Image: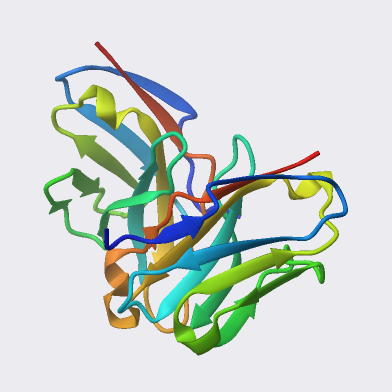
Length: 112
Length: 115
């Protein structure tokens, strides 16, 4: 079972920031938070991951709370092409723990 | 194109027929995964290869399913005696073991419809 809880859907206006929340209250110390997204009819795409520090790359920013029980993915200037299902996943990156356990994710709809 | 390729993109088959899907991973990636995704759900893990060795199979992978990765390159997923419940998107992904920290690369999937 997925170890995360996400809202089923969110809307965002084009050009505005999209903030997607994720709860992972049972996360353990060696588990990372990963975000993937899936645009319709495509495979999931890796976005970003983090352990406890905030992270930023060319696609997004990841803010993880100090207690690590929740996180927020931020798309700073959402475009119509960001409309997708966003999955928050916790995963132990050590050793043989290679599986990703997806939940149902959040359907983000970016409106013009 | 250096991404993960899957063939075919779509397959419609009659119940009881056998089907085979192919996945070509990114060439230097030594790990390969198969996932299945049904409508409205996230992908579910099916099986994993490191090079040519199949190291884990999910209990979702019944004995009608078989996957191979000869020579550690491309992989095939075969479903024998298909059932309507096998209708789903079958996704392949690959990664480099010591770069897995940075996530997998997924293909666009093969959508199977069993009629």
